[in-house]
Image (cartoon, rainbow over all chains, first blue to last red):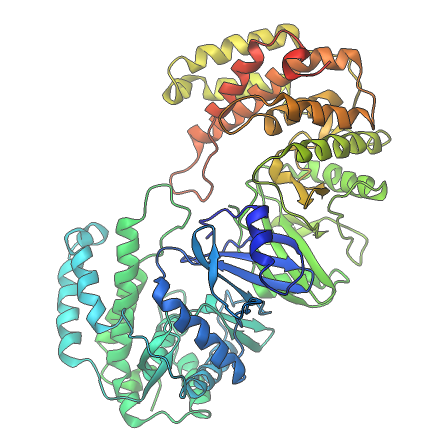
Length: 320
Length: 320
């Protein structure tokens, strides 16, 4: 639940006056999202989302994220579109933080994942990858291979507080990933955080993606691997090959998925599992007492990592 | 920040189908309010608030609250209006909790209180008191005199953890209030929780009251006393007589305020201060570690209580 910054009505009125949205009728903090402060902003011209970027988002990365949303939106990928102010700028400041207003995207994120969600996800992800192909800006994925070791070192000493032996397991996995990480696969813009709470549906129709604040330039198949972890495990920990097949099947109808990408999936899925295990572990060990946000369980991702460690090829995911 | 219950899209669609609001386009938890789970619900016909009543609200009290909002709304008092379902009922169940949809009230609550806010508040409060005069239902104020001693007993042993000597001060104050609590003043429906976050404004215009879930039948001047505490102290603890004068002055232009009510204000303000001191103290001592809601500081109300204890008459508030 995330509203870290309180915005006064006076500050908001001054801010909104820099856009052609009419007077503000209402502004309520949204109890979702972890990284930033989000508000549902009702103005005379409609409903918008106001985001104040909190300390985890680097200010110098914001033009990449906002320009990407404009780029994708212009190519028919459903996502929030940053509003330009009357001065032509989309990014400005509010309460000492970088801030932007984006269009409101209808739909709700699915609490219980059905197979049709995975099919819709695969298609929309592939369309996003295609639409991003000519996006000219670049941003390295600082939460990929090169970023994991520093994150691990920051958690190493206390990792065994969460589970005895965890530090040693993480060290071994990091060594293995550094030795075998796939390279040379088709690359472009990826979302890098396509969890269910970032994908909206109305009924069985996917209405769009939100929260592009981990988007970066990386191998496209890594996005697929993130989704295998985030969408294809059941709440009891079982991997659901039907969901994985539907996701990749509908992806492939939009963008070909190379044999090399398929073969790389087990390593990409291990890396993706380690990435979320490490960031959750870091948050678990470092969240301040009394914080608003309840940290997510890192061990969910240890379970997923172990599953991928015993996989011998994409056939284990039901994919070929 | 309050969303205690997660509502799935399927459950929500079934629930919304019982109202004539069209399909649900979006539903986002609101990061405000402490007692219940509130969602901003965007449907084809407009924007609404969905509330799930959590354990602090007694189910048997809900018809009082919802019928009161209908009553006040019908008499021109701006407040959320509960929507009736196609079966004529406003109150039903969602995710095992009592739930209702109410109309959306535009405006924002003031973060910095200016004198004009107090003037608007006084007038609207008096209009609400007048409009409630013929409301036929009754609900005792269980957080008035009779409710304070049990609350105190529940906190007594640990009160000094918050401030040494606090338990003794509370015991003395409770004795004094039990000996001198005003009775026989004009009574009717009061809101009983008119804090700034329950009063919305657009610019300098008050747009309405929300959150009637402490409303009850009590002496009307007690509502004024709650507002003296909640609106007329500056952040540095100083009492602002200008704000108090504006509030009562505009109240009186709508509803006469008797000499007896004026004279009773110091005791009513002490009681109101003790009420919020006790409930905050209880929450402070009993909130679970890692809870979403940051408890409010009880000692803010100890300071206010002490101010009222040394008051000799309404003149100390700038009132006569």
